[in-house]
Length: 166
Length: 293
Image (cartoon, rainbow over all chains, first blue to last red; front, side):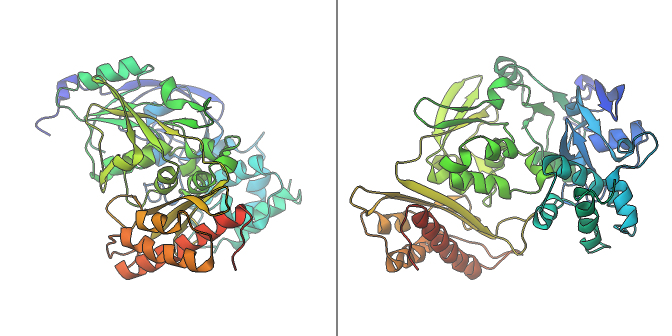
């Protein structure tokens, strides 16, 4: 600490980020994560912190259309980015087909991992509209669930892929 | 996280200026951050300045070269590497390894360059890059240099990079004619784990149908990723057979210096090297029309 050049430290960096369609101009600390920015600065607490090191996938969001664990993204890196969180999935107050399917299939118990699964599943179906069960399981490999045993999550995603939930 | 400054240069010149002016401060290059950000959080690494290199065009290059080789910028994420047209055909082991690293979330961020600079003995892309004879393009305020990947790793987490140097790109020469290659790693589950052992093998056939060239490289069984030269020497100039493959698999173990840890014992890792060497060799030979049962 004593050798740290506090006097030269840029304590805040301005960033502009589009989250769920809304543009925000924020001052962020260089060492804060995108996850902290979403939750603490923007109040978007749907995105959860589980492990904090990229293993559990609870904090998954889509950044420029691609899934990332937001605990492993520095807030300044998101400058100019487009971010989609679980709060941005609903359309006109209507849950997305995946959100409906998760409810219908009971694809959650405690719910903590659910936002991350929904974001990974959203990306999965964009990338592979008609996935096999194996492709679904690989697509959600970066998300851990300690309650459901995954089966209902897989079934819910496959149901949306087959058009059974819209 | 312990405070640091964040800079995102948009040119190499600017990046070199930051490195030259570090004045004893620790400048950490950031690409995908999947290793670095976690290491900073838990205090395994320190940074006074985090330098995001993703906005530097040279770091994002991904191009086939005139000689048939490929140049991969240090910040190019794994997904882009394995989805790049023809990578899976020309460098199958590299495509396979890049696809094995972490989840989609990780693969969209984690770069090939970062996997190499992090220098974990278990780095999945290291064995494929070694069998393809990859060369690291390194640059800094004092100039640029080329280092064969074999001399890039110096220990667990250690590389030849000086504090004021950056990995700019990885160059792969064209694969030898009539060759194939594969990478396999063992983990106790299907994905999202660190290799207990990993093996890449490349086989090129000579005009007479014998093995003209063989390259085998290992991960997670020595302080750095290593070539298994004794195994390669056994294969070269010989006719492929079950016995020959078995002999090479046995010899691959000579290149290992494994530790016993939570992922596996020394003996288990050595056994895995035999199995994975055999399987990757048989797979590569099968691609070349040589089926050994």
